[in-house]
Structures are given as C-alpha cells and as structure tokens.
Length: 248
Image (cartoon, rainbow, N blue to C red):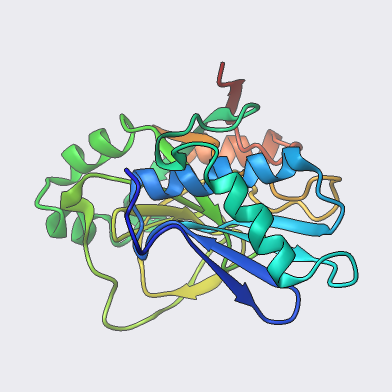
C-alpha cells in the first residue's frame, strides 16, 4: 500500500530534524511503515543521526548539522525508502507481548458504561471484547512513557468528551478514537476512564525508563478490585502483575 504522489513525504523539521511521513491519518499500514522504517534507520548507523523516534504514522530523526545537511540526509532517506514497500514491511525484531491485569468499571473505571454505550455494546460485552483483543503500542508520547494502544474495532471510534475530566490517576485505562491509553501520571483528560492498572509505564530510575516500546503488543486481563490491591501491595517491579513474553 504505497500512496502515490503524496506519501511517503520527507520534510525538514526545524534546524536539525527530519520527518518521514507515511500518511496523514493513522492506519495499520502507516504505523507498520513508521515502526519498520525507524528500525531500518537504526540499522544504518548513520553517524549524523542523534535520535530516532516514531509517531503514529511517521518517523522522526534529529541529526548533527555539522555532519550532514538536510539535503544530504534527504537523499539517504529517499534511497532507504526505495528499498522496499514499507507499508507491508515486517515489524521490528525484539518486540514483546504483555498481558496486563486491569479492573474495569466501578470506581476504577467510572466512564466504562458510557464508553460501552457509545460503542453500542453492553458493559460486559465491552469488557469481553477489550480483554480478547491484542493491541499494538502504536506510539509513545504526550507524557513520558505513555503508550497509545490500538487499533480497536471501528465501533470504538467514539469521540472525546466535550469537557475535561479534571484528573484521572496514574495507571488509568482510557479509551477514545479506537485507541487505549494507560496513563503514566495523574492527569486531566478528555478521554473516557474505563479501568485501572498497576502497571508502571514510566520508570525514571531505570536504565530504560519507558516500560513499553512502539511495536510491543498488549492485552488486558480482567481482575477484581481486591486483586488489584494485592498486586499493588506485593509488586516491587512496576510490572503490576503483568506477564511478559517475547514475540517470536
């Protein structure tokens, strides 16, 4: 799925940035392209590149302008783009699957019923669906380590709230526009709060502070409030009772 004449598009960003955009909207193939292309850039080991990160549908590079110009880097990126169809590329190696326990509804997810109704589901059917789907970490952003998980089915393309919720807690599971988010810190939000996890997505004292990486896959396991309390009391790893396995 290469979009002729428009995408991929290479754009300079500020003094020392380059953006390779694969679409103007999120879809599976554009996210796949962004993840795979970022991985391919890392493997090039270009001496000018200082930082590489992916968004929902693009790849960003920060580079040393004393080692390469925008024009030189554009040529290198164009050559790499022509190596294959990135929209159908294999996802990077080293990805993991995490099954994360979550309490749904009640005081831990006060807007679950509202979100389920917007998706035209009963509350129980919503929980059943959200615990059976395996989502991809599409991108990490907004707050340090905060994952955008998706995509859910089209019926979960529910709008944001018209007013902000003043604050949801760290570990809150949030849903809107076919995506889930696990919040890394207490924060206001315009998305619906449907559950609560003990998984810590941001661990600033660790060598790799972001617990989830773009391309990882996440599924949710429905637990009770008492189970969540026990996990919080016993867990010292930040994993919040999650099971983690490599994707082979």
